[in-house]
Image (cartoon, rainbow, N blue to C red; front, side, top):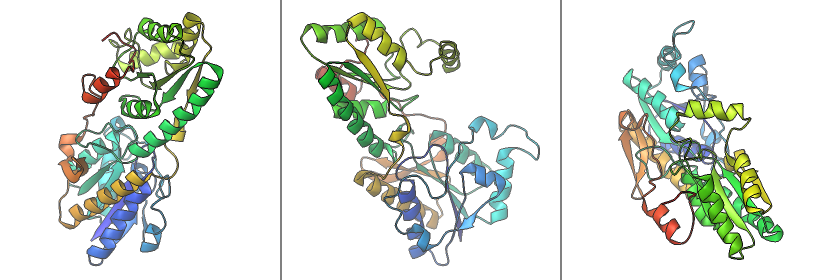
Length: 357
């Protein structure tokens, strides 16, 4: 049996741990298993590139960040667009067959899963493993890489808080999360942020400034605000993403954080600064939780392949490793529930979401 592994989309902690678990399981439980790595995600599959992976490749990578296979982004909408030599999808299918693969493991996020579902529907044996620091893949309680990013973002917010406290400032910390606010919500609560702004709860500038001004009047010397990169004003909520992006581009902005910091400073009279964490949240070694989750997910994915269960993606449900059909997951996102337990609890202990609930 011949197995291919690729990592697609944005990198995150834990990719190598999953690769390791898949490889070790197959080498120990499938007779004459042949494993190849496909470099740079779907890009490598489109070009027909692969190379053998041995047990030596799987050693000493459990705690290594990034991906030994390298990665790239291949927009889903371009997969079926006509190009010279056929579509990208048709070239991937042809190369899958040319490589003689019996199964392809795709480690990636929402876009990766959509493409994996296409390959599966075209007859390729595919098994997905859910990766993203955004934790927005439908059908799984957690994605691998998320908890490590929470740890990093939490630590960063706490470190910035010491500056806020020392200088009596309002500090805005921008956390990754364009569509979903899971990372900002979890790290914000864990770091003791006083306000959390996420895409699922559009905020009002008036409500934000009112909350912050009230803290100043109450004698609070500093305030920490965790802002998801995809946070949006209530006035923007009715617009499509493309329209919001156009307006922001015209203003020379990509997110609301910088502009909001300026407005807060003007309205409250308090020195206000912002910090963008950026790719810091993607890099570095996976935390202990992710190392365990990645090992469980990777090993389970390999077992599914050995049993001949294809067209699925691994999932975590009630702390049990299971799977979902790719067709049931592809194209769906998991968002923070504004009325859910975590948001409700946060409100009950005084955290504001910049709205008027």
